[in-house]
Length: 105
Image (cartoon, rainbow, N blue to C red):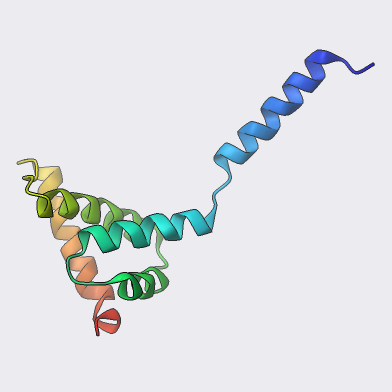
């Protein structure tokens, strides 16, 4: 007979492993979905292209934040009037200029 505590601990360890393991496919979908909703410039194909161009994880995170903020603005919301929001918008604008030229058609 198996030790019930060992089974519970083993199941918890497997669950924890799956919860922290990065899944590139989901990340790509999150990125392209956020891009399509918030870029205002790119369609799905352009967003997939952009996803392939942005290799730096910091740039990708900055663009995700930018896309989410832009999506809210495009829905009629207003960006928070903070230095952090301004920095997010500026960084995203700069990164779009850096990466998106080849993806616009």
